[in-house]
Amino acid sequence: MLNRVVLVGRLTRDPDLRYTPNGVAVANFTIAVNRPFSNQQGNREADFINCVVWRRAAENLANFMKKGSLVGVDGRLQSRSFDGQDGKRVFVTEVVADSVQFLDSKGSSSQGGGQQGSPGYQEKQSQSNNQEFSRQDEEDPFKNNGEPIDISDDDLPF
Image (cartoon, rainbow, N blue to C red; front, side, top):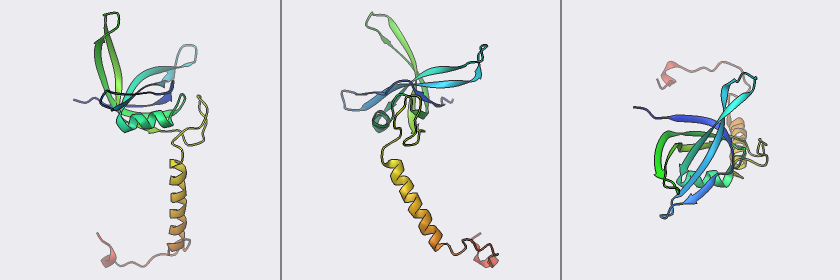
C-alpha cells in the first residue's frame, strides 16, 4: 500500500504554531495549489489543502515562512474525526508533512510580500559556495587548458 503526497503551493496565512502538553511543537497551515487547467471562463482555480507538521520542522516553518511563501510539502494523507463543541462529529482530512521545503529565495517577493527564507542561512551557504569555487579554480590544474589528458588504463579505478 502507498500513501504519499507531494505538493508545491503558497501559504494562505501565517502558520499556526502550538505546543502539545508534552512540549512537542505542531504547526497547522494551509497551502493554495493551482490546478493544471483553466475553468470555462479561462481562469485558473486553486485547491486549498490543510497540512500539519511536527517538531523542529514546525518551528522552522513558523519562524521563517509567512503568508504567500512558496513551500514544497512531502508527506501522507490522514483522516481523523473528533466531537466538536456542538457535540457533532467532525471529520478532517489533512496532509501530515514529513518535510517542508522553503522554495522562496531570500529577499524575493511573493503574493504575501516581504522577505522569505531563513535569514542568514542562504547567505552563509552562498558565501561558502563562492569560497569553495574560488579555491577550486586556483587548485584546478586542468582549468582552461583544453588539451587532452594522458591517462593510462592502469590509472583508472574501474
